[in-house]
Amino acid sequence: MNTIMEQAQRRQTGSYAGSHMGSRMVETVMIVTGTALFALFLYVLWIWVPRSEVRYTLLALCGGICLLAVIWCLWQRKQVCGFAEELCRTLDELMAGREPENYDPYEDTLTARVQGKFLQYYDLMSEQWRRSLKDKQTIQELVSDISHQVKTPIANLSMFIGILQKHQLSEEKQSEFLATMAGQIDKLDFLMQSLIKMSRLETGTFMMHTKETSLYDTIAQALNGVLARAEAKHIGLSVACDESVMVRHDSKWTAEALGNILDNAVKYTPEGGSVHVNVRPWQFYTRVDITDTGIGIPDEHCHDVFKRFYRGEDASGLEGVGLGLYLAQGIMNRQRGYISVKSKVGRGSTFSVYLLN
Image 1: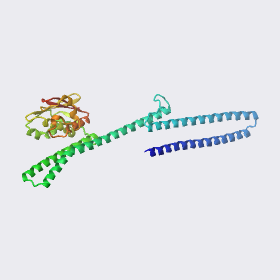
Image 2 (image 1 turned 180 degrees about the horizontal axis):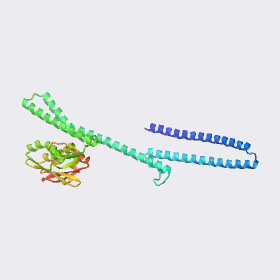
Image 3 (image 1 turned 60 degrees about the vertical axis):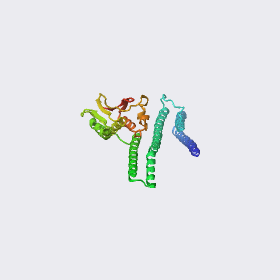
Image 4 (image 1 turned 90 degrees about the vertical axis):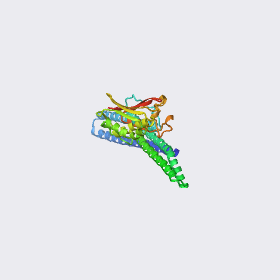
C-alpha cells in the first residue's frame, strides 16, 4: 500500500512539474513571438509615417497599448494558474478524506462554484461507498446466520444416517428414524426458503407489483396456509372483511406477510383457542387486525419480535426460526405500510397491519 501511495505521489509531483515546465515554455514562446511582432509593427510604422512628430506619437501610443496587452495577458495567466492550483488543492484534500480548508460556500466566485461541484460529487461517491460497505456487511451477516441456522438439522441428519448405517435396527425403529429425518429435511427446507426470502428482502432483489386488488382475496390466500394446523389444534378462525374492500397492494407478498402473522397466532395459541381477522377501512389506511388468544408477549419484548431470528423464552420449545414477523415487517415497509402490536401475557395479542389506500 505504501509503495502504491509513493508511486501516486511521484506521478502527481511529476505531473505538476511537467505542467509548470510546459507553462513556462508556452510563456517564453508567447513573449518572444509578441516581441518580434511588435518590432515588426514598429519598423513598418517607421517607414510608412514620414513626419517625425507623428511617427514618435504613434510609436508611443502603440508601445503603451502593447504594454497594457502584455500586462493583461500576464494577469490573466496568473488568474488561470491560481484557479488551477486552488482546484488541485481541493482535489488533494478530498482524496485525503478532508474537507477543503479554502472553500467558502457563500463566496460567489468561479472557484467556489467549481469546488462546490467537486464536494457534491465527493459526497455522492462517499454515500455510494458507505452503501456498498453496508451491503457487504449485510451479506456477511446473512452468510453467518445461514451457516448457524442450518448447522443443527444437518448435524441431526448426519447422526441419524450414521446410526442407520452402523446398526441393525428393526423395521419399526427404522421407520421412526426415517420419519424423524423427513421432519429434519422439512425443517431444513423451510429454513432455506425463509433465508432466501430474507436475503431477497434485505438486498432488494424482489420487486413489489402493487395494484388495486381485493383485500378479501388476499386474506383468504393467507388463511389457506394455516387452516390445517388450526383444525388440528381445534382453533377457531373467523374473518370480518367486506368482499368489496379494494386496497392498492402486492397480493402475493402481502398474503405472505399476513400468513406469517397468522401462522404465529395459530402456533402460540393453545388448543381450543381462537384467531380473529378484522378489517377496518380508514381514510388513508386500511387496518387489518389479527387477534389471538395465545400466550401473549411481555411489554418489553413487543418490539423485539420483529427482529431477525428473535425467539422469546416461552417460544423456545416450539418450532420456528424467528423470521416470520421480521419478513412481514419488511414486506409492509416496502409497501409504505407498517405493523404494530398490542399484547397481554396469558391473554393474547393483536397485530395490526396498516396498508396505504
